[in-house]
Length: 322
Image 1: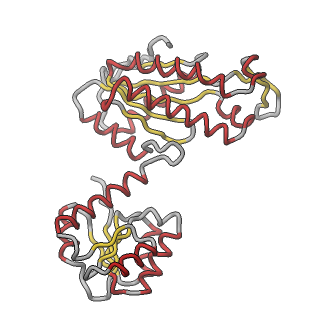
Image 2 (image 1 turned 30 degrees about the horizontal axis):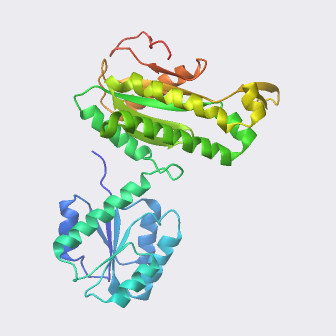
Image 3 (image 1 turned 90 degrees about the horizontal axis):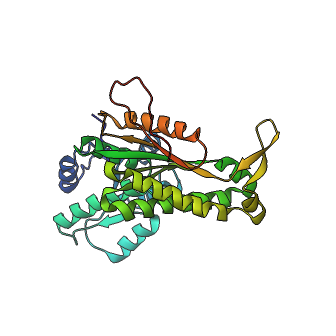
């Protein structure tokens, strides 16, 4: 069982958290920690990532300065801060928002709306942290969650690991700006094809760099992967200058400084399915998907390969590349 994120309440010494906060934390199964020392609050935030920090407004300028420091640090700024007022005051509310607070609650809101706002704030923070900044796609946290959902589902699903070939050499020749543009283009191809062919049953996530995970129903694997590779192969030559595009390669240096021909980028996809296998943990799926992706990268051109092995099958018999 995973450790639940902590909820912090920062208020005057000896003042317990309001009943609303206590009940809400209990309902959400969040451990509640009450801390009056601002230095200790900052220490806790730097050691971990609490789900939410409540701040009692009555602490005044010291707590305002605390919130400003938290939001000025990129590491702690992602932690949502909610300020509790004892009464509605537009000027006080505006001042707290100016410090960087993510939400301000007062008696103006009914208890049900206060709980809804707290739920939304936590959900928004989880979503924002789980999104990859360069593509705005779900990151590793959401990818793991999506794999878990499919492990628990009785249907046949496919987890596909997509990775660019010769991307590093392209980045070295054309620069990181053009490299980022290629990654963004790939993210849009994956998103548009998967969503277009699978609708809500599809999922696309960005691991990082030029590595992506997408998930589709087993019956859609061949059509989805074939379409992705065709669109990619049509678009990728346009990312090169006319000379490289016409030649179909350029000369780059290897790690020893020797010149060699670098072909245009291709895309390799390794596919793992639940058709012949059972999985207990996302790590098992990730390991097999990485293995299949690595095998696909040994093959020429843009290809996808599907793991056809069964549980406890020692043989390695992927499908023919497409």
